[in-house]
Length: 512
Image 1: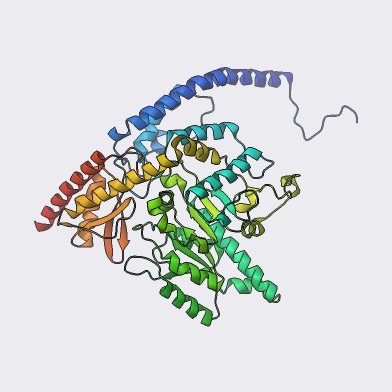
Image 2: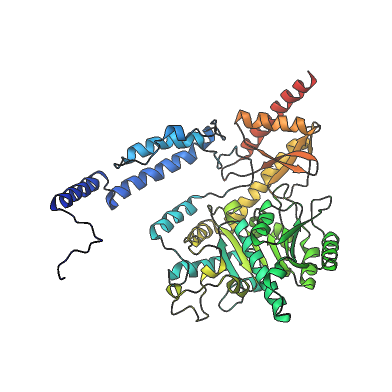
């Protein structure tokens, strides 16, 4: 009947409507961050960030908290009523900062660098304000097109072969992934799809399940664990190739594994070469391995997550020689090129290898320009659908530093690592474990693994500097990675004096 209320819609009395309106008005009164308030609070936050970074050297680099510390400091449920901005800011120092590991402290020498610069932070603010979800060109044309151009800019800095650049009509191109782990997984899945389709085209009776059981991928025994994880997710076998005395994968060992597996009826389809391993920054022999992959029709992926940034310097570009043999190449500007996380740069020679593997085209994502051949939709290049406007960070950093400024930054870190190496070599109690090429020094006390484990425990317990270890064959080794944008020779000297003092204490205790 006309005018009859839908039974599924609850009634709302005038009194309840009035109460709701009053509550909404109260909420707007309490929480009213309009553009004027945002300007004020934004300036305050910029000041807080600048003060934090200016004073980071005075904070303990590693937090003095136990697991679960934070839960006791905050309520068990979200507040029903809005809280003030001032209360939140006070809680940053009270609750958050005590549990922060200060990655940008000049006394942070663990893992590898994580990039940070003021231009990138400003670009991230703009990215958050624009707030587009750039899965396609139509979703935000500038988001797609700037990424394509920035990846070409960066590719030219690295002197990548023309085949990896999008240009105006190239078959290749670059894409920003979230991490090197994602890039490896994307490459593996694309290689898997390409190989299966090739084999089924030749033998249509072969099922995907039958082929999957026979596919096998290869990487060095020094490769990052993310390569093994990619194989786990991709449902294929991953085999570790024994590295040589310099922790490098060589042609003979790879060839032996390929021949053995082909004789056993397996199908090699994917090889990962690492340039700058996590443990000791060693380099697989790309000039040897590359031609084998091309001869065998195996996809070659290069993981240069850390070291890749250094290739913009002419004196380090030789480390990338052989990239012309690769099907895909990846490194992380968010490690060492002053572009804040996340920004992992990946190039492919043939973008159709990716788009044909990941293309899903529901009607709600289509647009009138997608078949024009003039643009790309990055949703077909990656695992997730949505993506942030990450190329803004590259655009800001590349323009405000320039190539020469970025090269100078890399060279400074390498110089500091050689300074630390020289200090270690002057103390006969210590040994350098691998060649120092870029910004990482692997060293240890001459003696047992237990001795070095004790030294590392003392170092990190003191919380003046922060290091992490690696294991090279049967040796427990300390890693000293030059990380912070603000690190200087004085910080390296102080870190070494601290290590020497603690080493003396450990050695005395061992004799007692």
